[in-house]
Image (cartoon, rainbow over all chains, first blue to last red; front, side, top):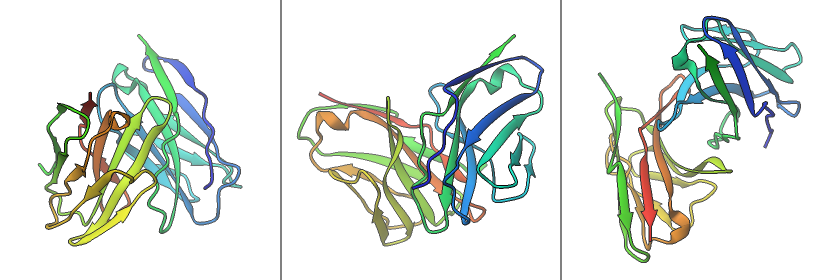
Length: 110
Length: 111
């Protein structure tokens, strides 16, 4: 299975943009890039996913490198409620194993 | 609003007992999943189902079973609970757009 690499932790100031990186150098052509986040004592929550093109939704943006070996989750204006562990996950068609690694623990500084 | 619920939220049991964790979703999703989350391992897939009467093993299925008699429910059974099954268990369902919706989790302690 293709693996992802994320920093263990990041800090950001409230109301500023946050860029969360993810490396996936062994990604295959059919792997989608998914991002989930997990707030303390809650189940994971879907954030965004994409294949090749950059994606935007009400929560965040996903910027995918042209060679697809890395991607960046962008939170445009961080709030205290965005403090969570963010997981970058690859999922290929027909592969049910959403492999959650250790993720990036994001701390928001008021 | 549609939702996914799990019960109980907390459970303490003894080694060797049978335990069933409930999962119920009201989105009418065909695809449902069970994960466990342990420190140092992230979430790991236990079992999954694509629809009624369909069940499949995930990466850590030993000691667990599931059944799917209707679209809304996917109960997870531990046939003979072991201390190694102490964990937080999450149920999820997936929509046609490939988004998984997770329940609030069940914290299980096996003494």
